[in-house]
Figure (tube, one colour):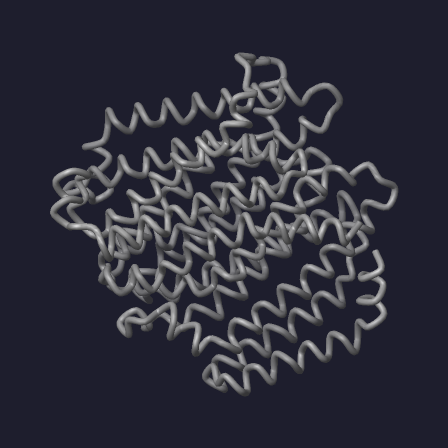
Length: 474
């Protein structure tokens, strides 16, 4: 069972991680060609689109998995959810077109309202593709899912390199309206998003003009708390990059966003895991040993996350040299270990959220996420202007730690799962201690960092030898 789950996670990881790694590989190109202030705009707009994607999908991706697994409901769930998202995306695009100028003035983009339309179209195509991608995951077609994702992103990367390095600026300006370099990645993203619709045609062609109102109400009530929780998550993940440009200097905001990218490796792993695990959680929910399964998964997952954090910080010196080539961006490097630890807390929180998803109590996720979002808002609004971008990093750390603890305590009262809590905490505390030791004491020394990493791995193998052997047999 675990081998199949791991296999699906690896393949979905190729579809979730590899494309994002490909996009991540563009970071040095952006940093070389865009100054800190332009990069601040770039990051702010991508943070905004993250919020838009949550609103437009309205939690219907998870709702799709919840109801499509019920007998004889798949087709109705597919059609109803697809047309709801299509309507959402279309209405949004029309409203954005009508109110483009007032929105641009409010967001401090009055000189470039066209930036907003690029992102409007990106959000439109991304939303249309959500349910077709979910269908591929539901039908356990990870190879096709990953293949489409990879083709999309290779196309985006290739087009981005062409625009920055080979295309004539006068041609781009006169024929495509790309007057600023910061618009090049916007256009490439738009083209790749549109390509996704074409690549998913074999799934989309099966959509029928069917909209089940009764089913829609059920999915709506199931999905909207997930949407609210998603918005709260986005507050924790992206509020900093969304507001910094308007509170601190654009140069500092750009540096923060650039260095934040170095923590994405952990985020990418969690994304790949989520792609493989979410359908699995619902499929095993009715099994007699489902709670033990959830407990085992959390334990194994936490160990892998610990190793990833240590691995990143052990090799931070050469990773920084490659991905942050411009010295002016490195003023925000101190956020990296804090954001990595925060992402570890979020990863554990995501696993701990299993109980309210399989018991249809999704409102719990909304409550917990809003608490985390409140911490993020308060710290950024009250302290960011005075103390600078480090406040944003610590806000993320504290918010995710709080969410993790609340979810654990609440879940154990309502849906007790036999987690190996002492072991998880022990290994996590040791990993965080070694991580901060690597960065703050040994200053990311490559040799010492990797010695600490392999020492931790050796300790794991020594203390969990029997567990690892058992896991390999399953």
